[in-house]
Each structure stands twice: as structure tokens, then as C-alpha cells.
Amino acid sequence: MPDLLLLQVGMGNADYLAAFLHVLLPLAFEFDPELVLVSAGFDSAIGDPEGQMQATPECFAHLTQLLQVLAGGRICAVLEGGYHLESLAQSVCMMVQTLLGDPTPPLPGLMVPCQRFEG
Image (cartoon, rainbow, N blue to C red; front, top):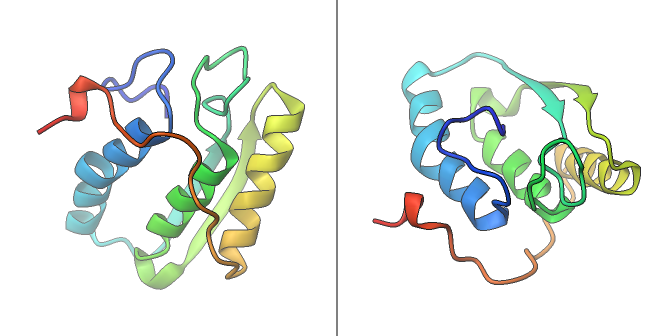
């Protein structure tokens, strides 16, 4: 997701959720997919030296839950990468738990997106 032009280095949970809710999901609903394919790269996970973002494992659980409203919940996810092994492992675990129906955990920290996503 760091490839999304709206995002900049250092963005966190609130920014990713805002991008999902205000940009990606509206487009996806318009497209009305029969299946959602996820190239699950975790470069945007907190601590990753490549992405330099601040998305927490809990954020990935919430993003996964948001995707489940598409295509009747039919999601195929393939692990792409991530370079901070602890953060990668926790993020993948949260994503899989959400896909299996576990409740999403609360999001840590202040939930205020950057100015790019403010009304």
C-alpha cells in the first residue's frame, strides 16, 4: 500500500484506515468483485525498514475485516513480503485470525489521520 500516492513515509493506522474507507473501498464497491485477491505485503508494518510506515498488526486485522464485506467474503491472500520479522509475524497472524472469524482487537494509539485525509 505504500505505492498509493496519497500516502507518505511515517503514516500509521488512522491514515491507512482513512485511505481504505475514503478511497479504496468506494472504488471496490463500485467494481463489485466476485473474489478479492490480496497481495499481502507488510512493508507498511511498524518497524519495517523498507516501508518506513507505522501500521500496527491490529490495523491489518481491521483492514482485513473491511475487505471481508466485498465479494461475499471470498478472499484469497498470498504473502508477498515484509522485512521486520517480528512485525511481519504479528501482522500475518492478525490477518489470518481475522479471516478465520476471530474478533478484531482494539487499535492502539490516537486515531487522527494526517491532513491529506481530513474533510
